[in-house]
Image 1 (cartoon, rainbow, N blue to C red):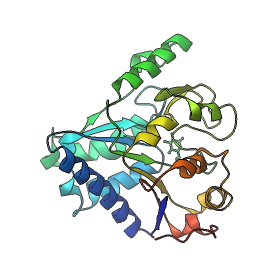
Image 2 (cartoon, rainbow, N blue to C red):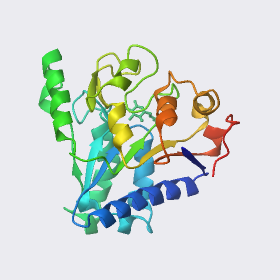
Image 3 (cartoon, rainbow, N blue to C red):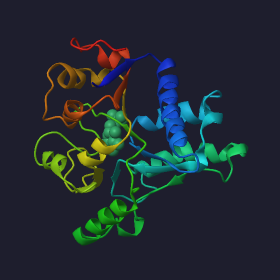
Image 4 (cartoon, rainbow, N blue to C red):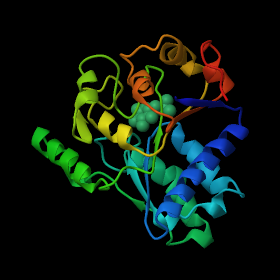
Length: 256
Ligand SMILES: O=C1O[C@H](COP(=O)(O)O)[C@@H](O)[C@H](O)[C@H]1O
């Protein structure tokens, strides 16, 4: 059963941060010398990550950054310093502020970006980029995936309806999306099997712009939406962190 938690800021940020740290601590209990493997989204999540893991004075010291291995659950096929790059947004929003905190200097996480030298290539180079990113993925289930939810119900770069729905059935962990309805059109995305195998999946969705889609996902259970599809197959390793504005129109689920 999917769990739903609803909080207003600043509690929202604090709870998301606590959930991340709990997943980190569980991973290190399992393997104290190992790495904590995390897949992150772009979009509004980045600011929440900064607030929870860098700015929060109580949570920040508990983050064991040097043991974190960070991957992008989706990425736009653009140079890393392009305003559309999810890596670029994460660098600007989290890595740069982190490196300016003297105590974290040179002790940052390992971050896996796409091969920038292939972004301007043709279809073959782009397929190569996808394959290379796929090859970088850890050989074990992700410890944590932090997923967003667009107002259209997309997550990662898995968009509703054809032609992207087929991605949900793929066995490959990473897929090439060449006609994303939300620009930029060329992207890579984790596919459903990776999400299904993860140890912990947390959606993070805030704001009134998400109200209608939350109703579609939770009340109508519209399976053309990848987010609703994930809910339908998920166990209790999937949770949703929402705020009251985002969940206002949902009637069939009472957040914990
Ligand atoms: O295009 C994207 O959008 C989603 C949702 O973003 P949000 O700003 O509405 O939270 C994001 O999760 C994904 O990583 C990104 O590429």
